Length: 340
Image (cartoon, rainbow, N blue to C red; front, side):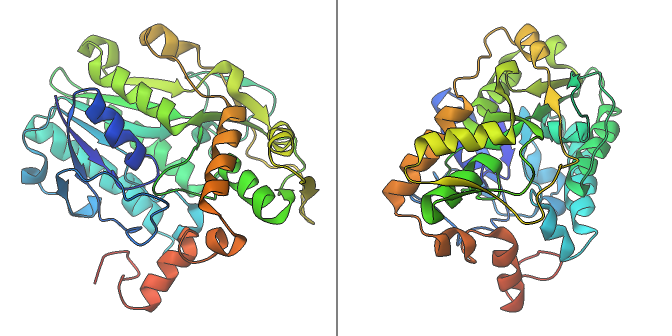
């Protein structure tokens, strides 16, 4: 199967591509590579690449593919502060346009990296795929809009799949330090403090980026009637945690660190628990291999091996908003995030 992975040089994509290749898929990537100067450890694996912003895709770029795995997005809400419409332009409008082109040129499957963050503010309820959306951020709202619009394109020749990923974590050649597990461990390792920005009560469902890839592999291999216009939460019921539980995992893993609450710490409106029964029923082979505690250990071992410092992950190399702002100030990027 010929698969196009958009955003293949990002946080998830750089881990997903080697796993897809190992499973026998023929992979091409499409990426503008905003973070080409931000590699953590080894360089991402090279595959045939279409060097384009997802907003610039043309029909000839995606002809001949059997499936598209669409990861490309602005994944950090503060990036939208550079230009408030960017999140919707890239994450929503460009995604719908990509799906329309894919359908027009005969791509059979369109796998969209959606998000459990669409459920937003939910309190103590455990939410399955039938739950109402209550998105809090522009990022989460953009996912709602894509699912709404792309689902209407489904027909007997075009099958969209909406993989609603839990909060991701894990080590990657294009690592993100703004994700909860990655961030808590980085603070603990470099400062001796486990910094909680909320009061520790909010709930989050967690999933490792390798397990996200396992879900993608299942969706690529499944019979078409199984995945046609399917929306499914990606994660595991046992991997719903309160923030204070995650902080305890970090305290038990990283030597000589203590939990500390930010001065303005309080309840976070983004609190939700998610039910993951459906993915196990539609994909019998799907099984998460990682737990949050294992993810904490992976991050700690990686940071220790890398010799991570606070200046590293707080500097412009790995802090995405600072990196992008710096590229704009240097004239390398436009304010619309196109390479100059």
